[in-house]
Image (cartoon, rainbow, N blue to C red):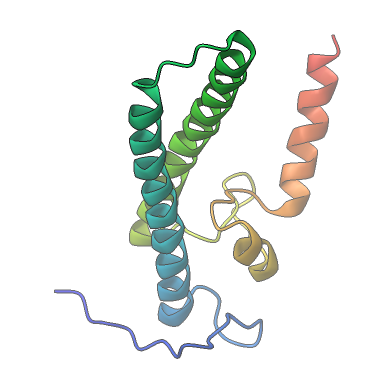
Length: 141
């Protein structure tokens, strides 16, 4: 059985504590779960909104086109967020397996600032920049 980790309301991971200790892991677990719950709530609201607006008959062609454009944009946004939820789930699995916070390329710790800004990060900033430069070089071929 898992023991609940006490985490003060104002807790922020600090460089002067052991990297990926229980408090830091709990902080990121809560942050990721809150982010996921927000996305899922927004998705439910979108589905309800699309169902409500889908039954409306708009006689003006321009208004109908505008609404269809808005609907397409909303669906594209939801698709991106669906992919984001799978990345959040992967980060939560990395927390459970003890791999969270370490670069998948170098094995080095990812900075706490980077993880706080982007908790789904799988590479350190330096490794990510190298990866993007290589990707750009190969894409230009």
